[in-house]
Image (cartoon, rainbow, N blue to C red):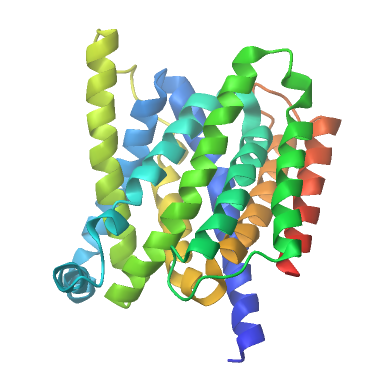
Length: 306
C-alpha cells in the first residue's frame, strides 16, 4: 500500500470513529438523562466496554504483556498509560451536557478543543513518530474551528448555563487529543491497538468509580434511578471500543492532527444527521449550528492541506 493510499485509509477510519463518537454522545446523553446522573451513565458505559474487552483478553494476552515489558524498559512512561482518564471525562461530559446542548453543539465544542490540542500534540511529539511542524494551513484550520464553535453556540450567549456546559466538551476535546497521542505509543509498544483499548477502559472505569463515589458522598442519597430497559442505551461502551481502537491503530501513520481532523468530520456529519432525524430536547439544529458545523468542515479541509 502506498503512503497516500495508506493515509487515505487512515483518514477514512478516523471518519468512521468520529461518527461512532457522535452516536455514543446521543446514547450516553439519553442514559444520563434517564438515570438523572451523568457520572453514573459514564460509569455504566465504560463498565460495559471493559467487560467486552476482558472477554477478549485471552486472545491478546501476549500483546498485553508487551506493555508491561515496555514500562519496565522505559520505552513507555506510566503517564502515557492513563489516557483512559481523558476518555472517562469525555463520556461524563456526554451524560452531563448532551441532553441540554444537543449532539450538534456538543460535537462542535468538542472538536474546537480537539483541533487546537491536536496541533499542539503533533508539534510536541506526544504521539508516536517525530514532531510535526505547525504550518500556516494547520494553524488557520485550528483557529477556524474556534470561530465555528463561537458561531454554533451564538444563540446561547444569553444563557450562562449553556455557555458553561459548552466549556465542558471543549475541555474534553483537549483531553481527547492527548489521549490519542499516548494511546498510539501504547499500541506501538504492544504491536496491537487492542491492549491499548483495554487499558483505556480499565483506567477510565476506575477513575469513574472513584468520581461516582465522591459525588455520591458529597450530595448524599442513594444510587441513581432505576436502569432503563432499552438495550440500545448500553451500546455506548462498544461504540467507544471502536473509537479508541481506531485512534490507537492509525495515529502513528497519520499523526494526531490528521486523526483528529478525520474524526471531526465524522463527528460533525454524524451529529447533524442524528439531531436532524432524531431531535433531542434541544430540538433540530438551527441556522447558527449548521453554519458553525459547515465552517468546521472547511477548517478540516484547510488544515488537511497543510
